[in-house]
Structures are given as structure tokens and as C-alpha cells.
Image 1 (cartoon, rainbow, N blue to C red):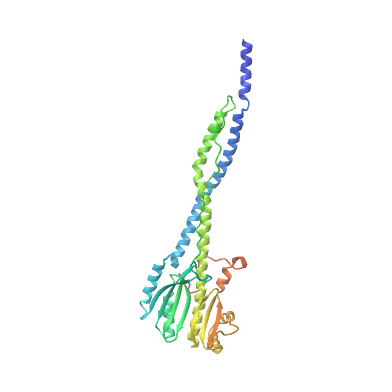
Image 2 (cartoon, rainbow, N blue to C red; image 1 turned 45 degrees about the vertical axis):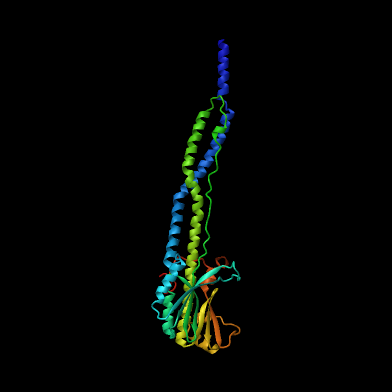
Length: 345
């Protein structure tokens, strides 16, 4: 009997100490959980830095938009302009809608708002001073057209400085689900299965404590990039409009100095286009009142379309260079003033 007892004991110990299928499966789950824990911890460690970056980019962009009045609604913009025209006797205001550039006419065409102001001032010097008050930034509005109407004064058309905004809807990437140790059947043995299950339970608690931040990081990264991109587009719009205003002011001052009759001036894609009442000789008078660099950039039509009207264009070099960063242009720089009349300063 003693021999039989010791034999069974030795056999039982030999079987119990061997790796059972339960322990083999639990070891696989431990490896799986260790990898999951490393991935979750890696993401979670980024959470504070990425969260701060996303919040800072959002705050900076919203601040810049507020400084330029780009966060104002149409009613607020209208109220601001109506308040300004009170200082101009006889001035009138109208808010209208037109089909957006590049859109075909039709019921589904995109539209844009125009703020139209008519001022009866006939003296060019006084009228131009009033126009500059009306378009002063903030709020930053796009100067569409300035028309000197014969015997009626001046008409100013302003548009909203539109910023392309693409909503970012990113679903958080949840950590990969782990296989539950409950799916592994228990077996008789002494390979440490109970300790392995306890270790798996502890690791699962650690993972669950961090997986919320780990998942949020996957949304914060694109959010930070989105706010940064929007900020760059805001800066671009400001710089493009700044350059357009610089060119318009140059032409207005030159028209006053040369005493030519400016019929109209406005923005057309990447150009500032101007029309004079007169001929090429009158255009030459205005040209002589410009600086050499501006004269060198001046674009003249091959033929004059309207008799008695001389036209010319000045390229908005900021728009041409910065709208195409993939074609050798420069990306928008940090906010700053390249010109004294920089909007928002």
C-alpha cells in the first residue's frame, strides 16, 4: 500500500507541475494584455501634451478670428457698418445677396452676402477718406468694388471675408478588446494558473484606467491639426486682404495726385482691377504717380473693351504666392504687420 501511495503521489506531482492547456492559454493572454497595456500607456502618456496643444491651437485661432471680427454674424456686421455711415450725411446702406464667384446661376447655386454703401460725397479727397473709415478693420471685410458714379457720389461694395471651415468628426479609436480569461477552462494542476489569472485581472484594471485618455488622444491629434490649419487660413485671408487694400490705396492716392477720374476699382481673383475715365494718356498720368515697383507690376489689356475707359490691373502677389504652397509659394507666416494699415492692428 505504501508503494502504491507514493507512486500515485509522485504521478500526481508530475502531472500537476507540468504546463497544462489552461496555463498555456493564459500565457497567451498575458502576452496579449502586455502588448495592449504598452499601447494604451504609450497613447495615454501623450494625452496631457496633445490636449494642451489642441486647446492652445483652438484658443489662438479663435482669438485671431475675434480680433479680426471674423466670428461676427451678418447682423452684427450690418450693425457696425450702419453705425459708421451715421457720420456720413446722406449715405445709404443695403444688404444684398449674389451668386458666389464660380457658381452657375440656378436655385441651387451658392450665394454670398454683399454690403452696399452709397455716399453722396462728390469731392474725391473727402469721399476716399470716408471710404477708408467704412472699410476699416476690424471687422475684416473683403473690398469687392468701389465705383465713382458720375454726379451721384461713390458706391462701396463689401463682402464677408470667408474662411473655409471643414468640420472634423473623428471617432475615437478604442483600444483593441482583450480576450477574457473566463473563456479559458480551469484544469487541475499546479502550474500557477491562479496567479496568472490574478495578474491578468490586475493588468485589465490598469488598461481600463488609461484607455479613456488613450482613445481621446486619437481625436485630439486631428483636432489640433484642424485648428492649426484654420489658423493658417485666417492668416492667409488677412494677408491677402491687407495686400489688396495696399494696392487699392496706392491707386486711390495716385488718382488724387494725378487728378484723373477713377471710374472703378475692385478685386478680381488675384488682381486689383481699376478703370479710368479717359484714354491711355490718362492712365499714363496715374502711372507716373505710382512707385517704380508698382509700375513694373502693372498689367495692361491688349485692347480697351469700352471706348473712353482705360483699364489696368495690379497682381496681388500675396494671393498668388500663398494660395499655392505646393507650387513654390510660401506658407502663411506668423501674424505680423507687413504694412502700416494691416487689418486688426
